[in-house]
Amino acid sequence: MQYCKRCKITVRNPHRKCPLCQGNLEGIPEEENQMFPDFTRENSRMAMGFRIFSFVCIAVCVAAVSVNWTMGFHSFWSGYVLAGVGCMWILSAVAIVKRRNLFKNAVWEAVLLWAVFLFWDFITGWRGWSVDFGIPIVLLAVYVILWVVVFVTRAPVSHYMIYMVIVSVGSLIPLILLLCGAVGVRLPSVLCVAGAVLMLSALAIFKGRALGEELRKKTHL
View (spheres, rainbow, N blue to C red):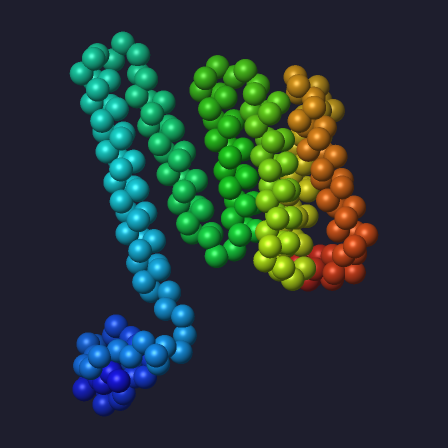
């Protein structure tokens, strides 16, 4: 059992610091008295791992610029390395921050991947692959990921309904691009729009009442 001299209390649940004054505790923590899951160790390991990852990213950028500078800046190829590492760092940071909610994480990653694909398509001369393949394939992947998470975790309807609706609405982008003739390869976009229609149809048919209630809660109607 742990004890705080300052507060004159005993602490049954193992703690690193006194929950009242944040001072040091005396005694040996007894793991069998653990009443709640300890997320501090998990968070500290995650934070340390991300710090190491950030340092490695900086080291790669420094090495790339140094080599490019040494060889002469005839072509700034290290700029692509910097952009690639930066995109990877942002995607990883969001994945870690949103890791508690897998549905929100999937939506955030999808939006960021759209931005990353458009960015790389633009800086490499715009060949249109981000519109033809990038955006629709990301949406199709998110459809599959969301349904897999639902079946594996058996999450209640209120936890995933709004995210499925958001992803389905996001499919309006490939639809608009198709109608405007801005898509060179139609198949991925057609499959993406078809997937969105099927997803919304499944929600309306099998979870129609829950969908209506959830939408009323979110829109305050």
